Length: 115
Length: 115
Image (cartoon, rainbow over all chains, first blue to last red; front, side):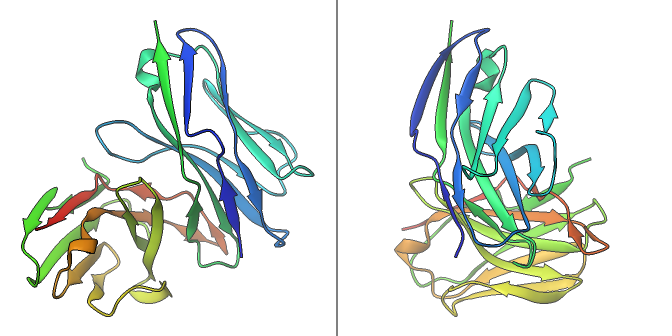
């Protein structure tokens, strides 16, 4: 069975600094996808970035990049130039290709951006 | 304009009642999901429908019954509500093309409180 681990329950970062949110995963399936979602205090789930297991390059979307290290089974999210609006809960999730497209989520990391 | 909408946003009810949550997506997606987020923010898949056909049914009590009248709608009916059903319920949708499943877009969530 697949598993996602986020070991940082809470993180602080100063505005304009970069921050890395950790995510490790466990699966024996060679084909999978890794996702990051943001959940602000208002409650909605916002898709940020996606990395496929066969993608050769790390995914990037604006200030978000995914540091994908396949051998280590890690998919860390890097947020550059943090903004106050980045304060939120961040979830890492994995989808197995043959798993009916269900997402298995980690427990989340609460990020607080400070002035 | 809303891509994935849910009604109601808040639902407060007493134990033993039956209630429904409605979900609609206007993205043209063919797959829809229900997730449950508990008080510790942990998200777990409950059900998934692809083209109105149930494809994921996780270990969920029989009191929960999803219904998909068409590809754009997935409703969740809950019978004999219990205190433990209090949670935020998220609907999501995605598109499956040529065997590839794209990212899921989430609705705003329905906060269910059972008293």
